[in-house]
Image (cartoon, rainbow over all chains, first blue to last red; front, top):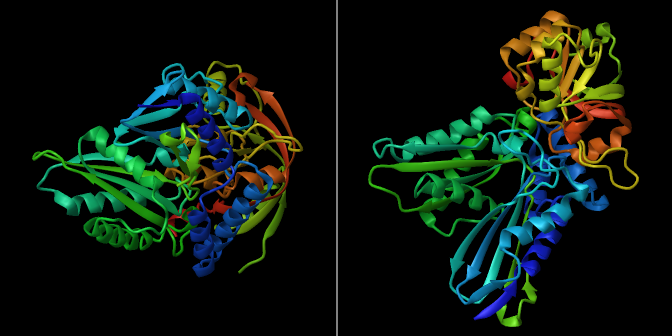
Length: 289
Length: 176
């Protein structure tokens, strides 16, 4: 067995937060520049111009790209040959989240009392066990203007994929200007209620412009992307050509009685990063995905 | 493309009347800043007969900033989703509020209240937190300090970019 200390994982997560709060992914940056170039609606073009200038300024001066620095969502895949030592993973991560958020907005509070935790903790941590000697970590800062526009449906098999597609498009149409479009959409198809929701979040880590390795889902993504852009919502809901930068689908077998569909909406700022800790190198961070 | 309109705050109601949906503006002057929790508490204070602060003639920007870093007045400072404040908006416009700044569509009740009172709703560019931070020249907490990022602030801005989203005729950019 290989030992990896949770503080090593957590410290690297803290570094990711510091970076991604100020820098959107390179693919996102490129996609927004392309959206600006092809836009001819003057109000949408003005908005895209401000959005692009903001992204450049934030990266250059290391300022948060958006004041909603979000809730921290972390997916951790732990190889089955790895033993996590040190503090419990959640606690180790929360310690570093608290440090990283000293200069970021603290948006996390108790749902009943609405009293702020003042640390932006706890992070939402999803762990799973995989084969191998590594720990793979994906980190996202999720804003809630877009999170609030997300949906989960449990469809009848008779309603089928056509209804799922209709609901995906309808959700984005109804969300309209609220989630700071052009949006990025994660979809979870199948599984159970929570599995679908989890897949819809995880799908948002896919790189904008990448193809789905499953050709059927890839076709579905391309069909839906066209439909979403045909909605004409445009940047900030001002109309125009680009309403969606990418739609990413994950699927899982489901029950004969159901078709769960989860739709997770992300704004135009994709703030995520990932890394792998190679256990064979005794916890040395050896590569960034 | 039309030119950008430069406007000073507090707004002259006659100037607001000239604006039309889609006009791009640069705002300079003072505004109030607060969002969900600030509205809830202000509304409760009014219902209890002890209004916490005056907003007549003012413009409210729905925003909760990041903490200031070195050399900043406030940290990142882009708009939040306005529709969560729809519940309070018609009442506030009927009682003298001049304008609001946020992002996203509003209810028909709000659109009607802007038209009836000669008020304007401006859409700031959602997500552009760093740009808006640079527009802020001064900021001071004036009420509900315990709410942290949701406290009520008075800020002074220079050349704050926005788009007219609802005009005094009830025109609505999100319908077009």
